[in-house]
Image 1 (spheres, rainbow, N blue to C red):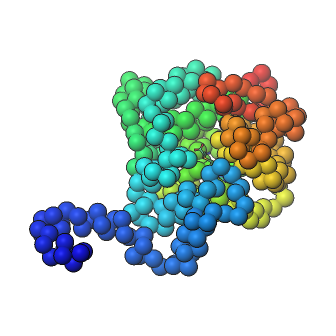
Image 2: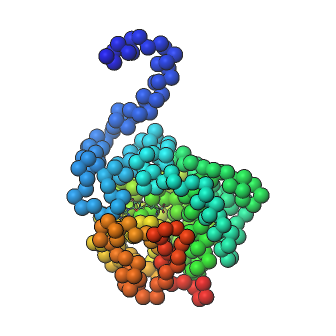
Image 3: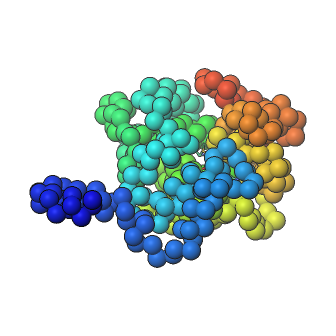
Amino acid sequence: MLAFVKKHMPESMKDKLRPVVRRVMSPFVAVHDRATLKATFRKAVRGRKLRTSVSDNGYYPLVCYLASKYDSIFADFKRNYVYNHILEVSGEREDYGCHFLKMIDGTPGFELTAEDWRDFQKNDSYGSPRVYPFRICGEDIMLSTSTIRYVKVLGDVVSMFDAGEVRSVAEIGAGYGGQCRIMMSRHSGMSIEQYTLIDLPEVVGLCERYLRNFPECRENIRYVDGGHMYLPDESYDLVMSNYAFSELNRDVQDMYLERIVRRSKRGYMVWNDCSERELNGYSVSEFMSLMPGSSRIEIDYPGTCLIVWGRKNGA
Ligand SMILES: C[S@@+](CC[C@H](N)C(=O)[O-])C[C@H]1O[C@@H](n2cnc3c(N)ncnc32)[C@H](O)[C@@H]1O
């Protein structure tokens, strides 16, 4: 059948189809580490025995793994259907971007110039995210909603904490590394000496691949597989986790609490109720009772709030 189609298809049509077929097939043809690919596929199909989190569903880690290995998948991983169930959610449209921009505008002590924004915009240069024009500092700047969200988080960090004292950061559930890049950027106004990224192994691979495109992220970043955390006994100036710690199952939350969260002087967590609903994770009040001095800040988004501790005086 295929031979028949090939024989009778006009050459012009074949020329058009060739790049599409090459693109779809490349991860399967150019397999240089077949054993890992096979193992990841097996995991995706059967699912992990222990589901550590809502996103540890087999398919999302597989897409991250493929994006970390193959140019063709990396090229537009931010539009990948499976990936968009977890990140760069297609529902995160322009209106959310405007919403975050308004919040950024009202953040005390966090003034940004058009140059700062053009630098943050570089986040969107990889993975082909959906970008929209936003009127910022008198210019139309194309940005993805997640990049604006990461800048909003940076604004919170700068305004709530003694940002000058934050030298070491640990981020639990770092996605593709977008928040890290914004925090490490020269335009963030922070001077972080060590940024520890913790995620599922496949996702950490994607972070490495993404972040190596940015000179400011080539040093001082430590990539940690959350399943095999061999971290030295040390403390962190700030632990962050956006829509991630609150998506882990309770056993994994306990492990991170002991190894990282309780060892951090300051904390910033965007919290949703996913794990509480699906994986017996901690509720906001349970978590706050474990973290004395923490406070809850409401966010204008259903089922979501912000938990912070170690704020500077009066923030
Ligand atoms: C909804 S995404 C949020 C990503 C990122 N923080 C952001 O705001 O764009 C949840 C993140 O938690 C990560 N995650 C899932 N299971 C994890 C685990 N066991 N340990 C660490 N991170 C995990 C996922 O891979 C994903 O990067």
